[in-house]
Image (cartoon, rainbow, N blue to C red; front, side, top):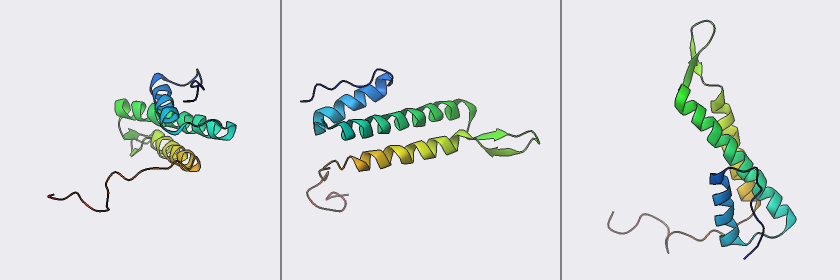
Length: 107
């Protein structure tokens, strides 16, 4: 297992995710570590936007007293896309959850 520790500026949740991914995929090359850090920084931005939206709501009222989407919904969406793109760039070998495609038997 790699001894590379999560960057200190990451949140506890992001560092735990770093540790799980490092344990499972043993990312050791510099490019892979940078991509993983980038993914988790985007993850943190997404979580931060989600926290504010949870308090303030999905809609806000503008200066004309009109409802509009909360501006952080764009940050949440873009951060999620950046995180997923970075994780995809890591080219992790993902094992299928089932032996065959489709719904589990009996459902």
